[in-house]
Image 1 (cartoon, rainbow, N blue to C red):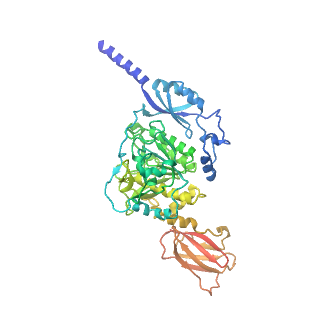
Image 2: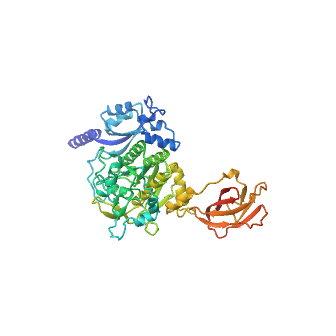
Length: 540
């Protein structure tokens, strides 16, 4: 009998403890009814810069952009739960609550469901000097950043005076200690437009883990002739979303809320060298079949950010050497840049994650140098680090220069050009994606004259795609346009072949031998005495 009494006492204490223990929950709301916000007056909740970006990309302001209903937020707080932050895109409130409180919250009429995303609030995370990333402390001679920038053609971009000036880049990471004090960042300290620490829930982003400092340095830092960032004249938003000591779904929601803040601030580029597949609570783990671009919270966040006209650039993951092997969310999102890693010689880094997604999309999209990449650490000195985390900011830096140079181009247009001009655009795979981008090839492709629209084209090209290497060209309607020359241009914008008919030709059908061309996409520039026309052909 005494034993039984003790058992009941233990059960009673356990129930009381569980009722009082606090955990963090994502509380999904049913609607945004009775909101005071309007799509016709977006300046209430979006900056003018964010509105201008939407106009440029033909993106409508919708209810998805409205903040969470403040009455719902207050009702949840009235239960005694602590509201931490909210997501307008997913209409979610993140709160810390006891079991008793969350049961009361679930009974509120406007609540759809709640899910556990982490245990109760953790102590403020300590500063960590190395950020948990792989280090390679080899001493190199010459300019430390030379290899990583040359690979993408960035020195030429800088020579043309495109260094990201006027472009706003949001970086989501684990902390940025030293950015507000170190001399390699002195030139951007006045260009830190916004910062917030979603882990500590305050405005101090210059603490915690140093991974973000190193990522930012690859884009922004300057240290004499020794170190040059990829886009050192850009402006920045710095958001701490990652709590390094543990791993729970709460970090995905912090990523989501940071992306929303970047959006409303007006960021042009979102860089995130973070990935999520397994957690300290195994029930939260993702499985490979969920890499479909629409399951993981962080993937949904990346996709929505992209739909708002933001260039979303994320690391593919460092799982290539382990049992997972493939990409990690949010790299499976559509219409973004998932970035893999290569060595200084352009060979895939062994740790770089593979694609494809479960719906068979190519991943990663592009690659950059992520093996022994130069970065600035919290000492202010150059260090060499490895990971797709280091390749990602190089692509963001390239994009910043391109957005500056081509301000009228939509992100979707730049993305397509980058993919079509990367080193293996003709044969993309799930190891290197479309390959290594190059600034000069991109610019040549964009600047290539478009000519008369194909609907007015006076010539017919067949067969296309070619089933043989002999291309037939026939005039429409016997118009005799006095064909002068045809230039064959590859996907990189390079003229690789010029064909000229004999001056005595009076025929209206021509043959061009293309046997010396490899398979891929090509552009024909057709010149006549009075005009020129363009036409795309495919050699399968």
